[in-house]
Amino acid sequence: MQYLHTMVRVSNLDESLHFYCDLLGLKEISRKDSEKGRFTLVFLAAPEDEKRAKEDRAPMIELTWNWDPEEYTGGRNFGHLAYRVDDIYVLCEHLQSNGVVINRPPRDGHMAFVRSPDGISVELLQKGEALEPREPWASMENTGTW
Image (cartoon, rainbow, N blue to C red; front, side, top):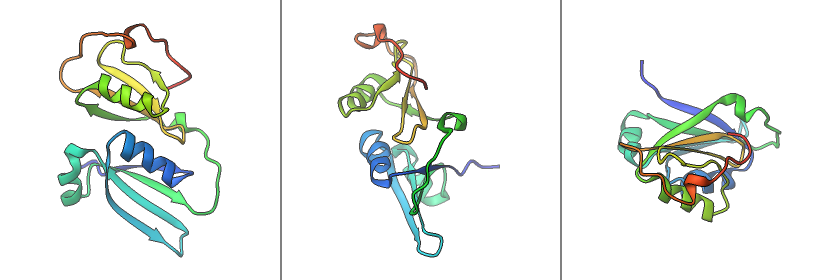
């Protein structure tokens, strides 16, 4: 068995690509438009998985954008995506300075949660050992749900 990808439906492809690529740092691997099916599929991979994603088509996240408007509910029922990051504090600062709410701040220097524009929870985990707790994160409260 081999993990291939996780699919999430998105309501605004541009907003979602901004979140996943520009802010989180994922790389677009491929894109497919289906006129007949009226949808676009965009496959993304983490930078350290980019080569493997291109060669093996895994591991990736598939963004599915249906061209006909549709309301998606239950994003939390999906669970969450998880990514290992080089410096959780640097990434959380980058996300926060670009308007992303840090729902569960990295108080412990190890784990944080944010949400995509469509309400998908994204867990961020510090690579290696947890970083030493530091402000403003150490005393920051949770915001919303994650």
